[in-house]
Length: 253
Length: 220
Image (cartoon, rainbow over the protein chains, first blue to last red):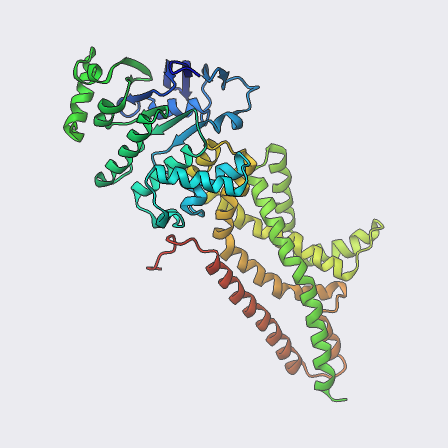
């Protein structure tokens, strides 16, 4: 359980939809406690890559390991392994019929089979970690703001004690004034040592928090490195253009 | 004894018999509908095929034919059902098949993100269905299911064809003694109306009770 231990290894992932090749061999590792940001233009395969990691999408080729267990091995119990991989969606995907607290509890009671009181305590802790206060615990998703919804979704992932949390453009569906509260929570988690792999266009977050940026283009990692390097001094013309555009749109911090 | 003194106890006895079928057939229909609708979306190829064939068959038979098949047809094979069993079973097969389409449609209408989030937590397909999809789908299917429940209350009168002594059956026999069809059928109509109205109110109350706060739209 060393700090430098590789917890996620993705090796040569390929994915094709009909005759469109979305991923053309992606390889990288994430170490415990690290935060990596995946950036790149729309259609680069970022979201597909994340879904190939927890096998919500089955890669055509390539392998994925989590803490030494090969997820892509058909003999691996993928439901068991998914418990260890938090996933935060762009559209939140909170369960509409459950309260904020129940949304966080359900994975603990039904998947991890924890007793109700233990699950409740854990869920409450997770909600407080993402600054969802007690007055919101019994609200339903439709009664929450976008930022609150996404923070509940992060708590839902966090409460499962995941090895890593995958974030798929977690702030892209939010009103601009709500982006900050979600990024702040993600940053706090990263600083606490929660391992994260984040697809995002928020370069401010990447520069502040990420250990590495993976810049994806055309289904491959075109370049990678320390955030400042990739954002301010990229090797490729596409990377440079991309970050110039992003900087114009989002502004740095 | 006069007409009313004789008819009222008789028709109430019929009404009790009608309710006796319905208290079993309605919940059983709903349960069958949920199973069939779920199987047609979540089942493997074999289960899907069986469930689809089942629905197509019992939705395709006229209810009278189903009643006759169960009562006389099965008797031919040495399986003897009582009129009560026949009526209850026929209503479940028919009602369940119809209602299952509302359930299937409702399941299909649930945003795929709900399934993805459930699976990402580590739920099995079955857990996803039970804990995430059905609780939402059943709420959406409820207005359609309510419609079928009201149909079933009314079409329970068809049980008379296999000799079950429900409201309509006792009334028909009664008419052959006192020829007062207007009074008799008015009473029948009133009884059915009372049952369907009670059901409609009950089901609406259930819909209200199950509503998800924040999702109801005041504009509608």
